[in-house]
Picture 1 (spheres, rainbow, N blue to C red):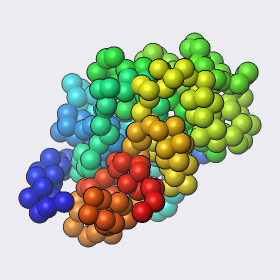
Picture 2 (picture 1 turned 60 degrees about the vertical axis):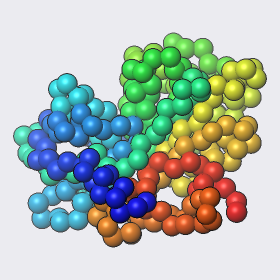
Picture 3 (picture 1 turned 60 degrees about the horizontal axis):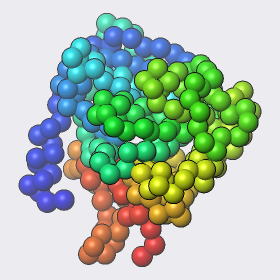
Length: 296
């Protein structure tokens, strides 16, 4: 990225004193935080994140993927899991308090107009960007996404039987995310923990069954979008490559500044000029899967 493009990107990032509107605490030390942040809500796109100051006494911010926004009402919603001191302190914040927020940050997912039957794959804290993306697709119209969501801790919602028939699903795999169901988006859940209604296995195993069950003309309409742990993303990229499908992945990485200055979140990617180190915060977090996981 050139310096000019870098500056242009930073001009789309807003700093807001966001009021906590609600904070729901769920099983598995997971939390859903909604804040009033009008600029971020208005400009955010699926795949982007916000850099949040979790507590006044903790100067280092934490990146959180955006799960939902309402541009008209001005709120932004995050789903996160406590994994360290920052998110532990964030989990204590209560409605009425204010949190300093920078956002939206990063390159978002790109909706492909010629791929109208997308596959969305989210694992753990990679679920929020898939929810945001599904919302964008239903608002755009003309897309029929299918979401495969995986978790090894209790899902941050109460699964319910899906009203949608989905090809390739094993008997009894009927668990779905209620919010997506309400939006008219088909989903199924995967886990190794034996949760009722879930596929017993990895998200890629369930995704493969769906892809194999599609007729060729329908499979030609599929693009793959994924966010989750690095091994999961690599497996999704391999699966997409096997079926010859375009695939975009949102990478998870430790960050310091989140605006491209420190280069502490670099990842090696393939470019037309050869391998290069790219910053996940501003060159991503969304990348073409083949650029990240392909072979030289």
